[in-house]
Length: 317
Image 1 (cartoon, helix red, strand yellow):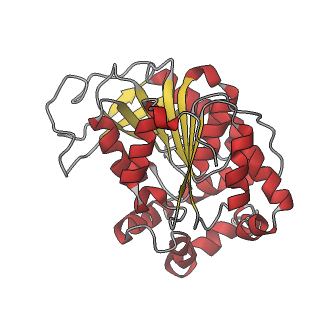
Image 2 (cartoon, helix red, strand yellow; image 1 turned 30 degrees about the vertical axis):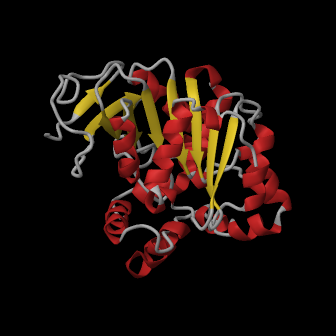
């Protein structure tokens, strides 16, 4: 399959997948299509599988990663018949890298996500997010519940639960100490993360991400403006103050009990902020990097949530 670039602006352009090119989704060399999505005046790079017309599953990555962190999860979702799109979000796509910190406020990130669905022609869609992508996903579910068919979040607790834990839980305060560096002005974080052959940036992955993926990520973050774009998400956010309110949608929350950034108090408290059908999946022995450590388990759980399997209806911690 060629890797032709498509431009999506309200409709899906005709291309290799859209015109029915035959390819087995189960092949080991599964390669998503490279596409581009235009919304809110920016152009976002993205990866896509399956043609137009299927139910959309939209995937949002976190920091410090890119859309291709979802590749192993995309394949089984596409095999199940869904149209799957993972986007390099604001700051990560070269065509969507505004200069001001205020350009990265969570309201604008939420607006981008709804804009992706609009450009892809999906009035309703399934939303899945990891890390920062999870934070945005919670925001979309709170602000646009009628647009979502289901919500699945990896690692990141409900934003209100996290804000409360950051105020009261010593363990979460300890785990979040890095925020002081990431929110520092004058590019202090960029300097620290990229110093000594990006030693600190490499360390963020805690040995859980394959070396080739780390090298690819570091290379992209060394490009002009990319790391600043990712860090501006932190600089624009007041983590200790969040009032997005309850989530009424069918929701799956997956958390690894060895997560080095997001602790148990907020993870368990998330149930209080979801009034719709909810399942909490605690993955014992797994860290923050769930997409790399257990992609098959993640895709199985997400697919069950998307399909509304009975076992996911009312499970709480």
